[in-house]
Image 1: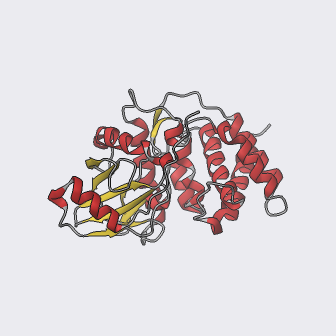
Image 2: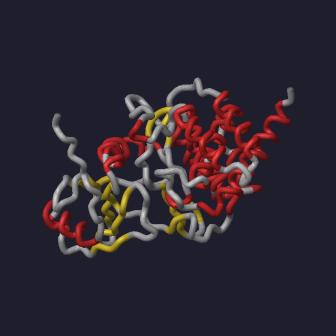
Length: 307
């Protein structure tokens, strides 16, 4: 029986990027290279000169995202009200790095998790406008939800066993009955609408702020065509109070989609708090608050609907 060759994870640093650029794009070999901080989870990003960025998948499971972004971002971009990454070139494996990688146009701005936002409510409305445009963009032949998107845009049931495992592991630390109640409601609110574009990783680190306002949206590695509910998780992971209400009011989506959105936010917060394998630990400190808010909003929605 042939042995399966395991690709080791390379050290991704400025020296590697310098070698890759020099060997494959010699016209840019003299451009300074510096890491973009904080570093990403799925990809590592480096600034190349003043006008470009280099984006390298951090593991094999993220490698398919390069081709997808190269193909689809230029097609989706004209339909959107804000800048998104614009691919300039695609690199190939080399210098000990085993996957394809991207050179994109640089987008100025600070991540929303650190950049000062002048008006949180206005920011929420602007993001809702961006998502509305994305969800309305022509989705013909777009990549359906699947492994490349980590099933964002697909059925929540994909993560049912994992979610229930996390709830059980957190017994005594969270309202487990409330969490299961909200999760089961999300599962029951099945999606039956047309397939639309979704971002797939709508997180504050992927929203760029400039002059206090939303300036660009980045990291479309998990994008695809399917159920847009996954894009609503940011209502609980980032917004609160008035800004959450404004975000919801500005999005033309029904109660079932919001129920599934609560499910996506709940799943992510649960697996991070329970420290399940593969979960990105960033944002750990906010997980109890997110879980509590999702449960509270589910119960409010249930009470509003009545029996």
